[in-house]
Image 1 (cartoon, rainbow, N blue to C red):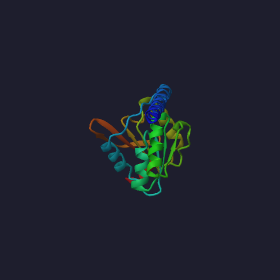
Image 2 (image 1 turned 90 degrees about the horizontal axis):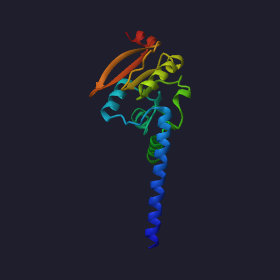
Image 3 (image 1 turned 90 degrees about the vertical axis):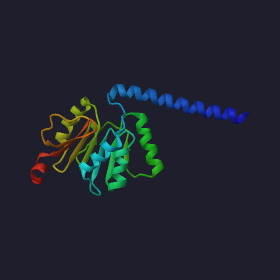
Image 4 (image 1 turned 180 degrees about the horizontal axis):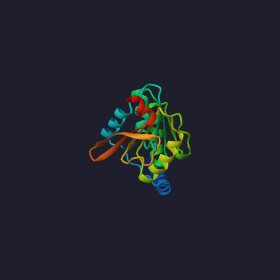
Length: 188
């Protein structure tokens, strides 16, 4: 009898916690205007192919969701990877994965627009057009000539210091690969 009551209380607590996290996520979604959508595996692999990450490079995932890019960069490429996420549910998923798998990468519950990204070698993003527009202005001012940017779904418009090097598709979804103007010139 006591076991049934204890199990019922545990289930009630878990259900309540999920409801609270969902409500908070919805409230924050209204603020950030970017839903959590996991990048398909084929798209993820293509983005890493474009990025050509080398060991110890600094990799940022902006709006990192469950941390799939961050953890793959660390595990498969020995990169120094960090992710930024503002929605509680995917952030908690990423932190849980990090804990369970023992990843050393950093996952921050912070707005990437307020962070210094100037040391980035590679930046991944899968953002909505409004966030892409704000990000474009930030990246043009902060990034160095070594940085590569890979955006899934939507392009980064109005970049002055970066050029679109390649646009490819994962099914019908575009993937954009950008390099700094100076880096593009030196490759030719």
